Image 1 (cartoon, rainbow, N blue to C red):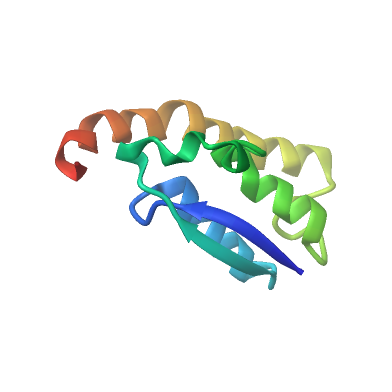
Image 2: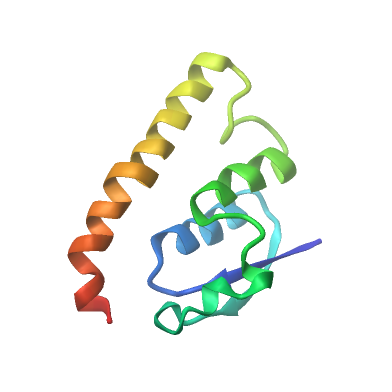
Length: 102
């Protein structure tokens, strides 16, 4: 089984997907996109949003619950940290570095 990842090398969410796919031992076919060309908006790239892909992959393909706990308290802690990253940390880092990266 192979999952297709539309990847921009300097994208933290994209690199996270690569790291998670290695952690759960799934094959990933990487297709590079150029964000400044808006290639991420082509139809085949819009299946699942960037920050939720790791959770989806672990829930679907993970062999155990070590990365995505079934215990509700532990899962809430994982989700809290993922949401903080997606809604607070990542936007701030992106806003401060995007001009340097282009």
